[in-house]
Amino acid sequence: MLRHLPSSAQRLRQPCAGGAALLDFRFFSNKNPPGCEEVPQGHKDSELTPHTCHAGLLRRKELYHLRHVQLQVDGKTLSVKDVFKGGLQIAFGVPDRGKVCSEQHAPGFAKAVQRFKELEVQLPVLCVSQGTPREAEQWASKLGLKPEEVRQVVDVGGRLTRYLGVELGIGEEGGPKSQRWAAILDNGVLLNLFVDKTPAAVDVSSAENLVQAVETMREAQKGL
Image (cartoon, rainbow, N blue to C red; front, side, top):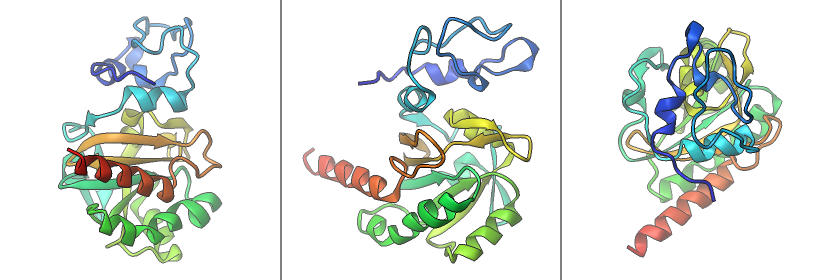
């Protein structure tokens, strides 16, 4: 079982020589990028994949303090604190709004809305993507996604994507392309992060898997 390292996310964000950020690199060997000599504990000499590593290192992290991250929602620029607030929330990230996103990932969450509601998850479910707000809204409209059920959240510049550690190469807008992921949050605190091994798959980040995860959480709470 992966250990939770409370200080790792902060160390991942420390700048290196030349302005690069440690989080922009994948430290799974002894060879570090020039000027980035400090390797976060848990990464050094590790054979962990990015999929496995960030999921363990970034568990239970407070997102509400990310003042440098701006998100576009319903035509407004909001802070992370404004978007991820209240009770239990579900968010999922799509890499490109392509075929897999359109036919499996997003529709799966739309179909699961009622089940999330029964589990007392705060609606709407949040769909995080990159690009422009117009592109996100056009895509949602094409899929018939109702904003009161699945709301579009645009990660401007990919800063949230970097912080979560789910970046995958460079996207068309110059920011990092995202892996396929989903998350459970509680009032701005990241409780669990589910990341698929490849953007072509909808497995651990599927709506069905998130429903099961929340069910497990609720059952555990009953026993307290």
